[in-house]
Image (cartoon, rainbow, N blue to C red; front, top):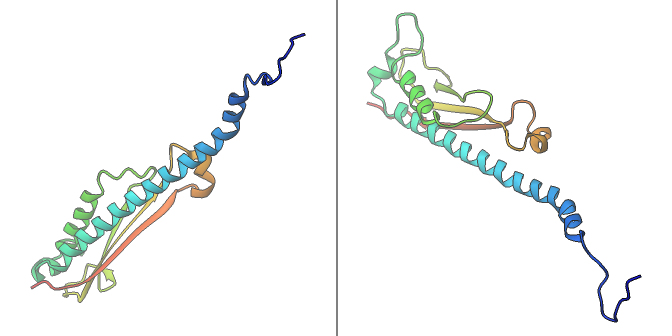
Length: 159
């Protein structure tokens, strides 16, 4: 038997390992949340910038570019170029499952009419999936991920 002197502490080997085992899951969750929210905010700001750039271009496009259409009636001219501007801005946005979608509207309808609109609108939609902490955040983000949407409407001022 080991004789203890007054003031000696009992053996505490392994106490730090037990404390770490208890605290580590909480620390991982606390690390996962800011990383996921930071990624969502980054992609939201990218979506807003893409929608704003495309809407600004479309709102100031010349009338001949707004009213110009392909023979088959599909979107062409400034609306197609505005969509390409938004998609180019979002080219580096890795969201996970699906690519971001860009919708361009003139007076609330798809830009296929040969009339000059009074307002233009660009909507960017994407879903952000969390691939790093899927086990922790999967129950909150769902199958598709966190939806991110940017909607920018501007008055048409082109000449």
